[in-house]
Structure formats: C-alpha cells, structure tokens
Length: 460
Image 1 (cartoon, rainbow, N blue to C red):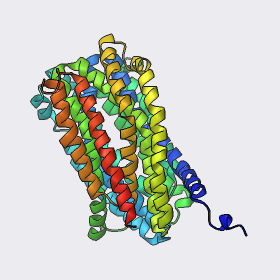
Image 2 (cartoon, rainbow, N blue to C red; image 1 turned 90 degrees about the vertical axis):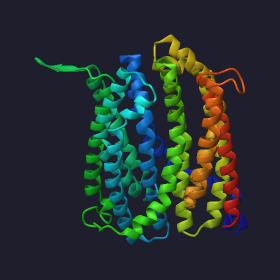
Image 3 (cartoon, rainbow, N blue to C red; image 1 turned 90 degrees about the horizontal axis):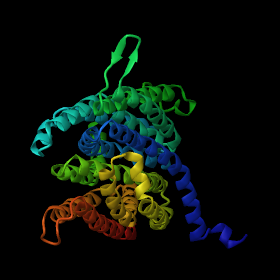
Image 4 (cartoon, helix red, strand yellow; image 1 turned 45 degrees about the vertical axis):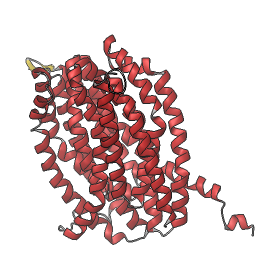
C-alpha cells in the first residue's frame, strides 16, 4: 500500500481539517450574522427615525453590548467542554455540564437586568443631553425584558454547538432576526388597529422588538429540543441535574477569563462611543455606523474562531494532539485570507456602506473617514480573534485575557484619548484619533496572541 495513503501529508490533513471547520463554521457564521443583523436593523431603523434616536440606540448598545458579551463569554465555556466530552466519548457528562451552565445563565439574567435598568447615572456623568439620555435608558429598560431569553439561548447553544450541530442555533437565530424587522417597524414608528393607536416609541421600540423576537426564538428552541430524536438521550427535563458547585466552579474558571476578555475588547469599542459623546450626536452617530458595519464583517473571522474552538477541543478530547497543533498553526492562513477580502471592501465601499445607514451628509462624511482606518486594521483584528479562539480550544484562557486587557485598555484607549483630544502627539484628530489607536492596539493583541499560540503548542 502507498505510504502516503497510510500517512496523509500535512497538506492533505490541513485541507481535511479546513473542510471540517467549514462544516462547523458555516452555520455559525449564518447564526452570527443573524444575531448581528438585529443590531444592524436596530441601528438603521433608529437612524431613519432621527439622528438623536440613532445616537441613543448607539449609546445604549455601548452599555449592554459589553455586558451581554461578558455573560455570553462565560457561557461559551460550555462549547469546548461539551465538545471535549463528545470527542472523548464521555456522553454521560454532557447533560450535567449543560445544566450547570443553565444555572449560571439564571444568575446572569438577574445581574444583567439589574445593570441595564440602572445606568442613567453613567449617562449623566458623561454629560449626555437629557433627551438622548431618556431615549437610551428607555431602550435599555425595554431590552432588559429579553435578557433571560438571550442568556438561556446561549447556554443551550453550548449543548447544540458542542454536539457539532451548529445548524440548530443558526435556524433559531434566523427566526429571531426575521421577526425583529417587522417588530422594529411596529414599535419604532407605531401602528393602529381600528380606533386603537399604538404610539411610535422611536429608539425605545428597538429594545421591545429585540426582546420579543428573542423570547419567541427561545420558546421555539425548547420545543425543538424536546421533540428532536437526536436529543432523546440529552433531554433537559429527563436529565435534570441539581447544582454541582464543583462543576460550576470548573465552568467559571474557564468561562470567566473568556467573558472578561470579550468584555475588554467590546467595551473598548463601546467606551470610544462614550468618550466621543461630548463631540455631539453627529460624531457618535458616525462612529456607531462604522462600528456596526465593521462588526458585521467581523462575524466571518469570529465564526471561524468559534469553529476552531469546537474543533480543537474535540481533537484534544479525542487525543489527536498532532492534528490539533496542525490546525491551530494553519488557521493563520485562513485569517489572512479573510482580512484580504474584508479590507478592500471596507475601504473602496465606504461611501456606499455609509449611505445605507443614514441620509445625513455630515454623518456620512465622518463615517467615510473612519471606514478607511477600519480597513487598515483588518489583518490585525482577524488575526487576534483567530488566535484567541485557538487558545480557548486548548482551554488556555487566563493569559489571553491579560493580553487583551493590556492591548486594549493600556495601549489603545489611552493613545486614542491623546490623539483625539490633545496636541501631545499631533493636532487633535477628533473621532479619527481613537480609530487610529485601534490599529496600534489590535496589532499589539495579534502579535502577542500569535506568539502565545506558537509557544503554547510547543509544549503539547
């Protein structure tokens, strides 16, 4: 027999692993785009209500986005844990882990709702005008009603994605997005039934629309899991497990650094919007437009990264360490390929993309400038998210958390403030100063995480 058939080459093994990534990552991408589309729909429709509603929704998103992603990050520890148990064929551990994740989600619901409904002092501290503050707080109050649905969906995602069934969450995220569009229209602009008139809620309506669509998606997912034959051996009610504090501690030890790292990254972007608030709603609106669009493009490398986490953890559970190492190191080429597609689209299409969000020319002119800077940092951004997800597959989360904290909060934000508001290094650059600093911060994260991957693998 041919030796190459017995021992596949590194290239053939790499291609096989990339195919497995595509099968896992394709549905994840659709799911992520669907979730992201909710924010895009909110932003676009609020923008057509008024620039103030757009600014308020953007500021509100700057508050709930990082908080939500912190809890989602904590719950994302379930994916590699479940996937690892599946790789090791230790199926008896899957539902107990899932239930401990659900308990964590229940507590997270209470904490997050309490945070979102008490952020008005932050807006006052930032000097936001009273009308924008009122809209932003009303938006968050409405959104808080949907928090239980979002967190429970993500806890159950640990089960379905960890089992390799990434298409399931894709379908229910699409359901949520499809419903969000008409709900947004009804709640933002109002509607009437006979002689009864429902008032136009503006930016607040975005929160109610998102909450309603998420609850419907959660209920539909619960019904599906209860009736689907693939999950007859993983039944939520039949396999109920009481709280296991040791298992919960284990999940938190893995998940808290992930959640904090995600919080650090996203809060950096959102903190920029808060720092820019003294420059007025036009600048905030432009920043939100660019952040929203770039976040949409970011879903491709993020989905690749999530698939890498699942695949690497599965291979480690199956004790296929060499394959995991090969996959981890080859992922950088996928990341570079994605960035080489994203960057030209953002740079050359920045005028067109801006026009999709707003008709106000002053907002568009600022957004066009920021899009050019956003295109520049694509290679660094795609690389850092790919590398950090490889490390999560290896359950290495603490050091990457500190790398993110250093790169974003110790490098990017201070540099951005200096470039935006002072003349220490150059004339004040306005909003462009923070986006120029993002290039430096993301490059720092990409380099440090890449070094960590290479060193970490050397000890496997």
